[in-house]
Image (cartoon, rainbow, N blue to C red; front, side):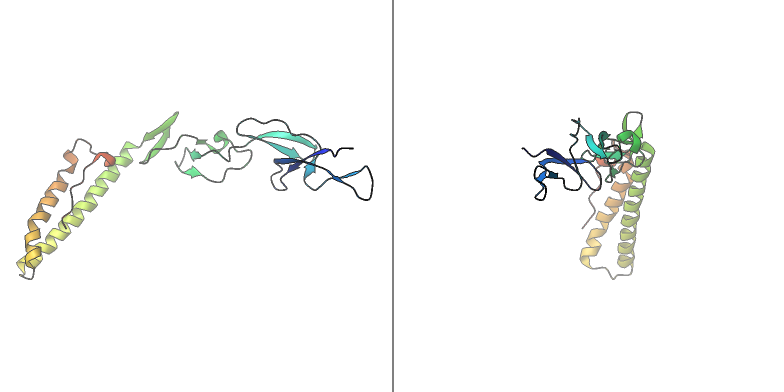
Length: 190
């Protein structure tokens, strides 16, 4: 007599794992032993993003959504969702398979758009930080020159810092403003 087929399922998620054969019972000829977390009920065929889950109460398989192997991003935060469980769906997680763009993504309707206000504010803040740093460096150089404690190299670099400050002030006049990825920032003097 051939051993009956058995179907292994996870002891934690109860999802179908594999098919095997029952073991002969050495104490009772013609009888079979069934390991824990197995059933003789054949699981159904599942489709994409589905898994068969064994219900121990009804002793039947249920087809359940399974998006664990699909990259999903939260529509609320634009962050990748790492803790997807059996039964979760993009709708239940308020997520999408569309990867958000790199800068300031916001979900609108059926897709990602760039939050232009956030992008413009970030560009202005970046410009302010660069300009503040450049003006500070220029001021320190000027002070050391006026006190006659600057080296010849430092004195020679003063015009470069002045030119750099002026170039930074002109950044908002670039055609790409305020799109940070399209801006060409002036090269800071050495």
